[in-house]
Amino acid sequence: MAKDLNTAARLSVAPMMDWTDRHCRYLHRLLSRETLLYTEMVTAPALVRGGAVHLLDFNEEEHPVALQLGGSDPAELAQAAKLSEERGYDEVNLNCGCPSDRVQSGTFGAVLMRQPTLVADCVKAMQDAVSVEVTVKCRIGVDDQDPHEVLPAFLEEVSATGCNRFTIHARKAWLQGLSPKENRDIPPLDYDLVHAMKARFPELHLSLNGGVTSLAEAQVHLDRGLDGVMIGRSAYHQPADILCAADPQIYGTGEVTDPVTVVHQMLPYIENHVSAGGKLGQVTRHMLGLFAGKPGARQWRRILSENAHKPGAGPDLVVEALAAVTGAAEAAERQAV
Ligand SMILES: Cc1cc2nc3c(=O)[nH]c(=O)nc-3n(C[C@H](O)[C@H](O)[C@H](O)COP(=O)(O)O)c2cc1C
Image (cartoon, rainbow, N blue to C red; front, side):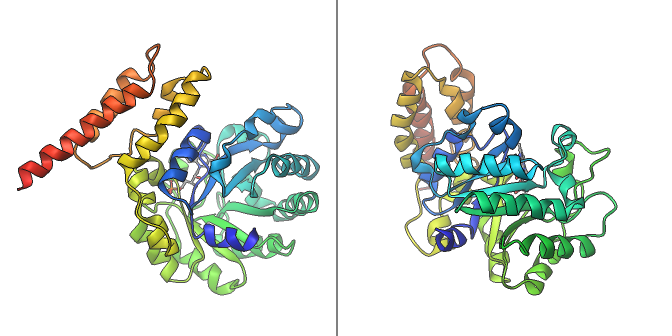
């Protein structure tokens, strides 16, 4: 699988807590067959000590799919990685980039940029426990660290374990004084440093993350020599813009997908979810941006967000919202001629 994963990782959708859940990933997979999808972060203590293995649930259709783990105890991460492999994930990724308070208190996430030896121990323990690939998502540094010194040292030490695929969020995390949200916007991006790492470690598979808002921008980084680009917020808020053309453009395979067709393909999934007792809004909240920038986008979003939580709401509501989109598209076409 590793070779295929290296190809899949040319484009990936970032791990995002509360956003990239299984419903979101199911939608993204219908939009792009090839893109590598990441789960929300699951903490090793929750899996190992808390026994919360339901956090590993996913749909078989999601492959290739990587589970992201948070933690800093090698033995516990090894056990969590084993559980993830048994559950069928294609890759296990270690979070060394998340700055949230909750995560800091457990000594994991971005604070691990200060402890490359511990990260290497964690990765080694995970590798020893599983045969799927173990990868790392990191920042370029934290707080007052000099990224030009710490990032190469981090990559060198961690890759000595045999780990050879990294995703680098191209900005520092400031662990004091900034909220997690501010930490995704305020520290400046340094794309050139990530490109310099590829020149310095040509044998590593390096993906750049942070601030990429279109497929064309992703392509620029790939053309400059990086192995992959990971997109987070834009893939979530405008999934069609990022994912519909990804297969032909980034992988040279398949066709551009049509969001209207994808909505139709979501209906049986939604029906199953609702008949099993799930709420419509749990699925449709990830679909609100599907028509962003297109005629009917406002009605689509409004119909779903105002009604999806109501008792008895099901696939019919999605059909109704879609009719508003197709109606608006037809009206726009009539106006254009
Ligand atoms: C709502 C939200 C939740 C996130 N949760 C995680 C997470 O669980 N693990 C992680 O490594 N990064 C997490 N991130 C950071 C993203 O993976 C990504 O690194 C960041 O958003 C920068 O990429 P972007 O500019 O393309 O969004 C999260 C980001 C957002 C917006």
